[in-house]
Length: 334
Image 1 (cartoon, rainbow, N blue to C red):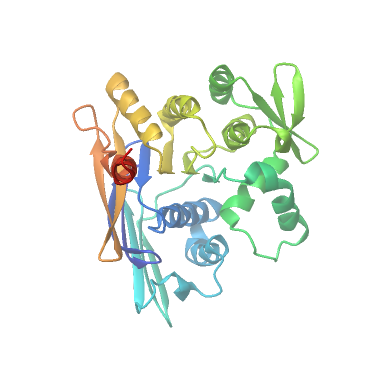
Image 2 (tube, rainbow, N blue to C red):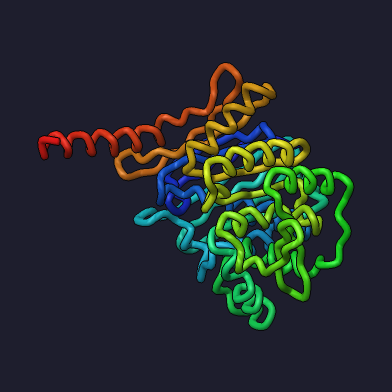
């Protein structure tokens, strides 16, 4: 799987980011409002445009950024109170540099030997099981109404187009693992999504919230939506810690020949990956964002058997909550 570097300056919430992705799995850790999803959407826009039409990638990226970020003008990507922003992506196969000011959008693509054979896939599971029918109807009947990010509507449109597709052998193996871990199957019928637990079948909107969140991975395998790049935005949403551990195991198997980017706030997910790192001796790229003087900075590290993913920033919050609780009890004389 290809490697690349990504640099961002004054891009939406992010003041400065200097990142590298060399491993199959990249986890993105940062507080709320620090731009984790914005990184995913930027990469999705770039990779999707390069897949859709490599020869027209410059104009394609420009329009895809607007529809993915729901922008009226591209200068809205510039961080508040700044005059310009830029991003730079570089790999052995490709180099993209973009400068944006209030009046200019300059995009340069060089050494473009990057020829993806499939579209990237973006999954944001929160709420999607409840609202997918309304989201898809908007895209289907009002295609010019850009009310929801195309990163989400692309996935739903492709899912219903490929309703009758046959899974590949590789995907079937992963589906069997999924069924073993989560005891559920999913399928599409007449533009509706159904879940099957043993002999019981029903609409996904009637299922438990955790099963709603997990279903999109299975569906992407069943209908061959999952290509070489997967973006997962907080996949631990609605999941019990037991299922989070199973999810980490499943993703580690999916990543055998794919590149997966995951945003998360879950120390359960990160520690589950740490367990896999130790057992399988794999490496995971870690992109971590920090607030410094109200500005967001990102840096990247590599987690391995000798240097695991650092979850202290998440644990510190928990420790402070417990500390405040005991101080409160002391004040009450308990």
